[in-house]
Length: 165
Image (tube, rainbow, N blue to C red; front, side):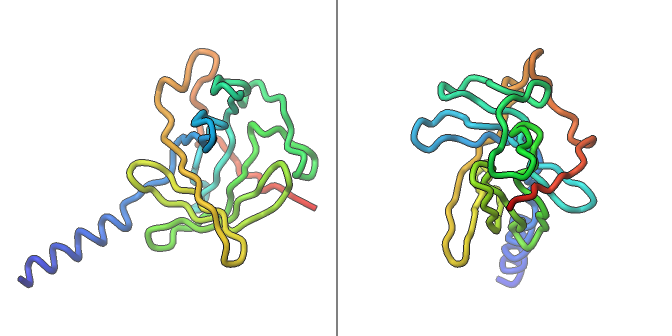
């Protein structure tokens, strides 16, 4: 019984601390089921960030990339391009979750953020006071990249925290 309890405790700890949020994730429109954007979650100086690397049109087809940005974020000072903007920053690992900040680039509202992996997907929770909302992001696949949209080298990313009014 003691061995079983010890095994269960060790297995639980390994599961709780084994998740890795880094990589490329697609934000999915909850109404249409189509991708909206792809975000690269990357580490820089032991802190995690999320940068938009591509956006999709209403049909789920690739619209913009880091190499060819077009639309700008009206809620952010300087109106940066969506593609190339860090919308998640300051994520630190706390137990089984990563906690930091996330911004709504259209409105400029900043929320507390919690991210964790569940069933192979990334759960992104934005929180304001005691209220919160979850989004499920799915992992990007190799097919999401092509000759016209090469996988970015996240080791070259330097974080830029967005400024709002």
